[in-house]
Amino acid sequence: MNKIRIAVVGYGNLGKGAEKAIAGNNDQELVAVFSRRELEHSLYQPLTGITDWRDKVDVLLLCGGSATDLPKQGPELAAHFNFIERSTFQSCALVRRP
Image (cartoon, rainbow, N blue to C red):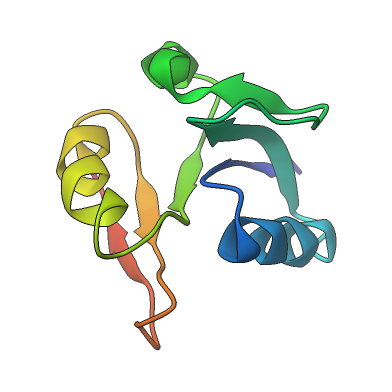
C-alpha cells in the first residue's frame, strides 16, 4: 500500500504537532516541511519553492497563523494542492481540493 505523502506548511506548535501525528500513522509519510524562515530540519524546504512539489505531495497541511497566513496562503495553495487547513482557533479541519 502506498503511503499518503503529506507536507506541512508552517512549523510552529501546530506544525510540530502535525509532524508527531503523522509519525503515528503507518499509512502516512511526512515528505516536506515548508516555512518562510530557515529551519534546522531534515525535511525543510523554503516556502518560495512549494509549487515545485505539486506532484510529490498528496495532501498539504496548512499550519500557519490563522489571522495572517491562512487567508492568503489558503486560496493561493488551493490552486495547486489538496490541503487541510488547521489553526489554533478552529476545532475541525476543512479539506479542500483543487
